[in-house]
Length: 361
Image 1 (cartoon, rainbow, N blue to C red):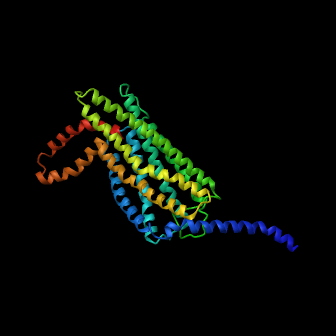
Image 2 (cartoon, rainbow, N blue to C red):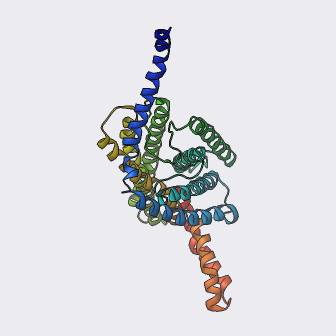
């Protein structure tokens, strides 16, 4: 009887031993880069700065799009949703700042940690997909400018954004309630081994593949837009809009540069990061991959600060509204209100040719 009991309990003992071994490996390697404190202060400082500048810039951008930007088209719908996604990502950053400032210790409920982490990544990828939609819209507009056909109407763009938000929200629910596989509730945003939860790794692999698809779309769309405009400006230098076409072409390359700078390093590192999560590799390699992943993630979050700058630089209508709001009060103070109407009229005339700059986004 005793022998039978030992036989029945041996699988349980073996399973518990495997779990303990996995937990020990995760704590030893997965937390190493966090526990040594080398990235704790830089991460807290950079996320705080990104939060402050990103929150201010995206609130201003959303205010412009909702209250002052009267032109209703598919790009406006995408830009509003892009600003919303950036704002929701900004809301997640104070929790990361508090975590790193508190010596990498999470003081809230573990479920809330998973909510913050997954909402952060959800809005990052929503931003990526929206930038992809905008690039397709601009390319289609350039190709079909004579027929005035569009990639999507305003209503279709709205429905597309709603579908994107619903799919993204539903997708993160299993990630939140599946648990983190950790007994230490004070740890958050940490490296995890996914040997016993490989489905999470597969989800991350799908996201990486989708990113490279979107990146290819952006390179193709903005590359063709820029080359087409440069060709027109060179072949017809006497054309009234030749100079403007050249500027718009350079701005297209600027969009690609920002996207590449912010997202490509992270998704290159992500390939090795996911591989380390589902294989048995040395702690030194895990430490290196984890640190590079954390640093490249800062660049991805930094994109939320650069998006409002991109709106201002590339979108003539947004630039006009912001400059009018900023300059109107100063002009009124300087002249006592004299000639303010003529100033607005003159600025409207100067900015009107730049309205087409919206096509760069």
